Length: 120
Image 1 (cartoon, rainbow, N blue to C red):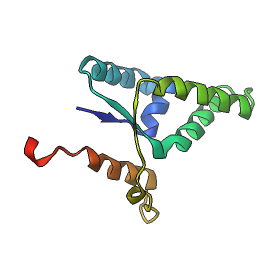
Image 2: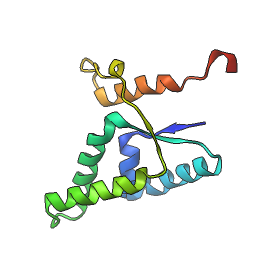
Image 3: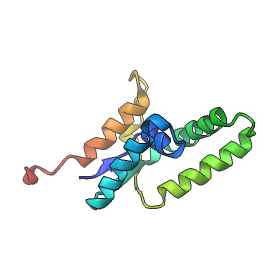
């Protein structure tokens, strides 16, 4: 089974957020042990950078914004090194009527992971 990571899950691991870090780390180890592919959604890249930079600044307020941005980019680059990238498709973009556009995009992207009818 493959796994598509939500922004918050990535931030939980990269920030790290102590209350969730171990659980996320364990899930990723389990994926690795099962040779499952772990995916990141390309439509979330800006949100990933923004939220990780914000978490870095919350944890270490003395760090200037530009330095926090560089740290966030380096952390995410290292994290993404062994992940697969799920492309953002045009049909997943018009989600502005949704109460949570980001989650709506991921739900639409997840539909592409549905098993083929012949595999039921």
